[in-house]
Length: 202
Image (cartoon, rainbow, N blue to C red; front, side, top):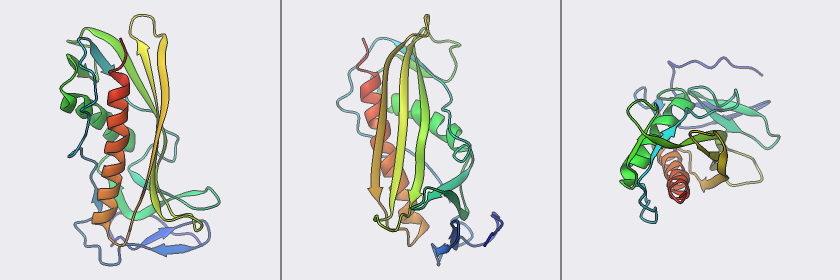
């Protein structure tokens, strides 16, 4: 069975490879966009530094390089939540949130998406490995986010640190509000770890 993903109907169904799962049966027309925003970022353990940071736009596999919200099932195939989407393509949203996370920390001299106006010591690059709602039957439905961060010296482009950060969070996806809250909570968990880790560099 195949279905065309549209953006103008009620958010009712996730279409997987050979079955349909109904989600958000009471979703209204003004609940189609899930926003990723940092409202409770905890970075108290971050070290204060006197250097500045350039953050490159994150990279993502093709199925995540989109504004559609990915859903995975037990055989590893990826589909999308029908009629729901991020406010922008996921790499662009994550880029903004990464910058915001360092600004919120108030532990760094300067951070931006461009080196203009900055005396950059390090460049941070992030690969998006997973960013999805996992509905595998043998597992409790959960949000999975996995990001690999590389910190490079600006002048030499030498990678000084690299680490993968992963979090999973059980989710009750009976409505879009709770799903949105779970995505945001999982993202804040991962980004707080990335901030603390990055600022541990000398």
